[in-house]
Image (cartoon, rainbow, N blue to C red):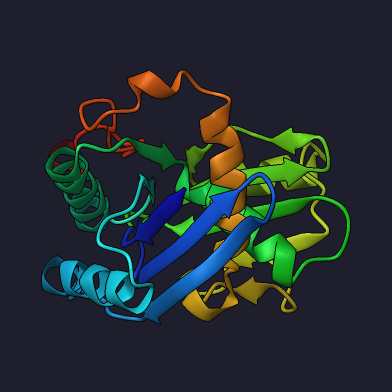
Length: 223
């Protein structure tokens, strides 16, 4: 089974092509990462083409994408491209929460045991936020700094690992890790996504089923 993963929901483009079998597990065939704010609209398809050529694959058997939350434009580009390719190639497509994906990718490379807090700068004075413990993930939230700080002060959230994008949040320790594209383990993200995919009704993962995860609803209303 050949797999294609990509993500443009932040200020980067990430593309991973891999194969998977019960006998050999997941094997990376090609991987590209570029920090390209505001360039993914015209670079993503080309990087997918390059990645497939490097992997010597004409088309994958499954597309996996991070479908938000994140940049409105970045989410739209990721989801639209995934849906178009799924329809063109007549293959299934599966979306995973971006925050969940990043925590999986970060914890594989950077974290110590325990709980983790991830705050993505969502602009408009708020953060896209997810908290994880060894037993699972919280839902993804769209929170003000005051709301997050309240959860920390009340010990509702007691993170050992702190991750963020943008400027260092005032309620974060100086030792917190700023997310960069190169700090994410894409193989771990794809392996985790594949496990989630196998737990779904796979015949329902067509291009019409992939939806953007904006959280805020219509961004126009917030402008």
